[in-house]
Length: 332
Image (cartoon, rainbow, N blue to C red; front, side):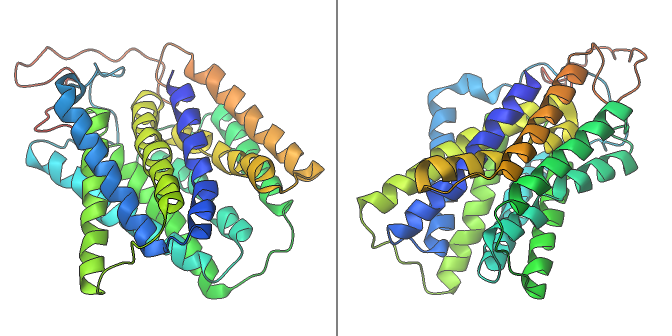
């Protein structure tokens, strides 16, 4: 289930580039896109929490007990980290990505951005949260190599030093975002965590709009339609499924499975925008999908992927703890 959720998230995120291109064609500016995307997503998640109070309650943690390398976070710090993920992490990553996109080809930008699965895996191993097993290493090599083939198959890429630096900064920012999210995702319900992240990002872009004199929202219904697709499909659904998958299979596997995203983008670009997939890209897509199969088989084991197979003793139930066996003040 965890792998399936991460794959669904990757597919939703992969569609965002297509929705974004169609929104730009409808007259939507990058500033308006980001502001409306996060604001609308925050509102939708907030309404969902009001209508369905049960969404505020987290599911039982599939891996009870303190995970090595994951610091204990309690009380108000959970709320602060969740909002900060959006206000700082997500907002910074999106800003860096679109700044780089103004300077370089989208294909090369995506290639540099998708170094983040390697960075997440290395970071998780260094922090002691995961172990680089042979199976996971093989999946990482296959996913990275497949992504390289998919994106290099596009051809015609230009190199811009500053753009490349911004793209790598976006990858590094997203790496930190995933590793920090892993410290609270087990303590908070996915819908609440997503709502707080979206609210934080919306606050950042709202403040930026006020300081810069506002954004132009004078575009037609087509622009609003594609913005709604971005907010609902590529933000709300994508975020919820990613957090739900992350808490089940851990940051390394979640990041590796997310490499399906550029494959989805390339496939949708072929179907919607008339772009053609080359044989090199098809081979790369096959490699990425093979990494999914490898991780799917490993995550089916009874113990948590990448951790010691010895049983972890359950701690006694504490009345101050929620269903996740972790303190939670509010839930995202």
